[in-house]
Image 1 (cartoon, rainbow, N blue to C red):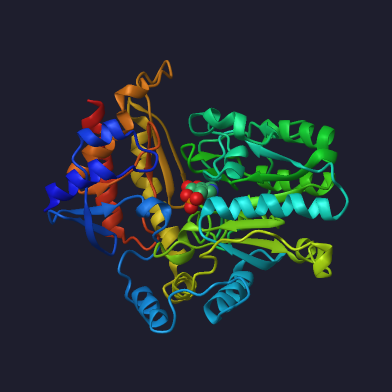
Image 2 (cartoon, rainbow, N blue to C red; image 1 turned 45 degrees about the horizontal axis):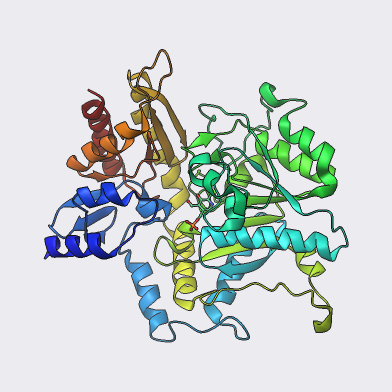
Length: 453
Ligand SMILES: Cc1ncc(COP(=O)(O)O)c(C=O)c1O
């Protein structure tokens, strides 16, 4: 049966972010079931889910409380529209999100995925200024290396040429700023606080300041991933940069959209990454881990000030004309609520902190490997950047597929990973145990050694 399924897959499917020629040559991993951090394939092999099923899984697969929440909701209603109706799981979840979000935020707008969460924030920011008769404020500032999803609005503020440059003619124009980079950020304390020391490299006169100073009358918002750019290879920004951008936004009357699709819900050690620099954004975009990796659901959180500007008589047509058919799906909202309940009950953030230290200690020796350029980590997000010639800083040619080779070698050792080019990404489920983390680290070290030999 697995070989027949593989044939059908190759004949009928088109996978995301995949060169299908390469896919057709390979033996696809057909996942049949999972338990905890372990995926099981159709041949009965077990693999540790080293990237949390694309950065979404929190408590592992088949978590009984989450399974139960879906079943419980299924016995009531699987889906009902949110256009003209409402329901209890969505209401309770909105209340919960506002309780845990930064204090500036008071309104929740649901959608289905990270791209739409950002798309919604962009449109809301645009309409906000439009409604306030500041019609020139139509542009966005984003960061080079940023990733916000694959719909055209999110692509317009994306900063990864490989993904975005081809579509340039379809995109709206804005400004992009090169953020400062660093190798690591010192850990925050237990309350998630960091002293706000500004990195000297961008103190005074950085690219962001120049753009905002000169063009603020045309700028609706700055959109950025806080602290770390995930999809461009776990690239870290130095401590203080986010707070610095937030201050500039305030000074120049520009809104701040924090895209926490990847970092939200504990991934970086605090519930939201913005907490680490005490930043209160105007919009917070969340998705991925919101449902513990069970069902697609996203939310764009906004301030009361933004929300109020959309109010008026029907025939003023100030309403936000945007929505998706499966917005606020009740099954997804119910499992998200159960997921967030477990954070406190199981002290998930405590585990993230312990595993973060373990991961850092375990990955430290890899930084000295002759084919590792850099190891970057924040919380349970890590990237190991491979390099062909370390001293000269020369990369492998893209066709060498070195990132993929390391992941193939990890697979032989019982770990499933998906690279970003030549960056090997580690994003384990947040509830991963000490023993499982050791297994992951051993497999990765062995895989890097084998593939680069
Ligand atoms: C920061 C960030 N924003 C947005 C997205 C897009 O999310 P989705 O794939 O759910 O559309 C991603 C996905 O990786 C992301 O990392």
